[in-house]
Amino acid sequence: MAENEVKPSEPSGKVSFDEALDKSGFGLYSYTMTCLTGIAVIAYVSIAYASTIIVPTSACELETTISQQGLLASGPTVGSMIGGLIWGYLADTRGRRKMMLVGLFGGTIFNLIASISVNWIMLLIIQFIASSFGSGFYAISMSLLSESVPVAKRNLVVLVVSSIFLLSQGLISGLAIPIIPMSFSYYLPALDIYFNSWRLLLIVYSVPSIVSFIWMYFMQESPKFVYVKGDPDRALEILRRIHRVNNLWSKEEFNVTGIIEQEVTEAPEEKSSIKDQIVPLFKTPLLKYTLIVTGLQAFRQVAAFFVWLPTILNQFVLIVETGEGTDLTMCNIIDMDAPVVEDSVPCALDETSLLIVLAFTALTFLVNVFLTTVIHKVGRRNMVIIVTALSGICGILVNLIPNAYASLIMFAIFSSGIVVIGFYTAITVAIFPTHLRALAIALPMTFGRLATFASIQILNLMLATSCDAGFYLFAGLFGSSAIIASFLPDDRRLQKPVPENKEENVENPDEKQTPTKL
Image (cartoon, rainbow, N blue to C red):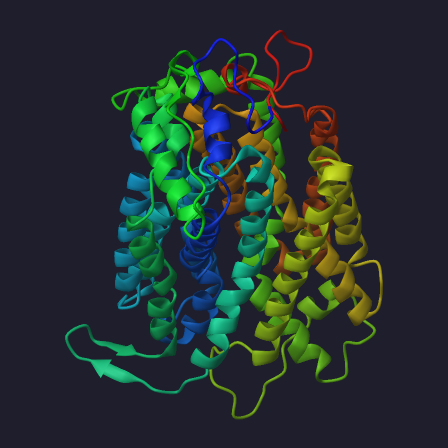
């Protein structure tokens, strides 16, 4: 719909919601909201993935065994799995901004408490609770962002934030580089613990949540959420405020006097049950797409390798530096006994391995940026098919090439397949209606986290007993995502905007309900 087009049957100045959102512009508020969402995503990673750094570096003090380390590594995944569904429901019924503030506050408090854990059980429990609070950061902030910018810019901002998400694990590894080697140790008699570098790192990992909480307090609720809740007047006021900030240095007026009320779709009440929110996702015409997106998330088990990435690369660096592993595959190197390094700090990760983790995540960031530039020509569905198939093949080739550096390159390409998470989010945002959107993002991610929890344990065992089979299994699963994605419609054929009263329908060109833009 053209930006200045007004329906003849409506009085001048009264337009559809999408037209009003377009007229609010894309400026300072939009950039600020995008930056905030990026920091919120970093806050989520800092809580949910902190265990990738904390587990090995706390092993000496907490005296954890291999199995206990596996539990510590998967604890945040379980918390994310359980909390994600709840936060999706709360965000769809009580508001995006309000629930983000609650989640950020709780995540910050419990992550700070984790820094004074007296044993591994307390650390496990507190990180589980912290990740339960943090599990909604991604889905809720993405929903809030996508509903606060013009439709034409939605794909761009979602993919930009997805790029930040991909870089986030590298950022937390980068923060660990100067902190973990610190040798200070202060005894706290009240708790009978020593405050040292890994505890300080947990405090540092709470900073993004604190910043996000303060920043989010000054932002607006999603105007689209308010609109579908049946309050177009308040939605219009929010759009006016967004327009004012977007055009802070311009005299452009917001020439919208009202939003067409009959286009407001029925939204759930705050007291509606989670069943009322979930059931529509498992009824036609949404059922097909719920199953497809859930299957894609469940098969995205390259994420399990990211949990053990610092440990895998630490072993790789230690072996290759001896000069003995250059003609070996990745699994051959993993199977070897790590050499004893004199004067090394016990339970410390090698700085080079952390830099490689940073390089890995920078690679995925750059890959995602590149794919974003060509996505409109290729289409999101086709891009998912290409990326998952290529990554799956490279994951299988990792242990078929008897050269450490070539094997590492194959592993890097396999790992870069994690970029599909941004495409999955963009597809979900386009397909599902506003009043189900946060839950539609959270539900498949919950099943994905459940699969990741199992995969972390399985991979931990297989890396020690049957490394090659572990790569073949998870690379095969990820590669088969290409088959699942092929059942999605080609979004390049579905670019024509549709009226607002149809935007809330599902994407299915064969049905009477016209699909929204994918």
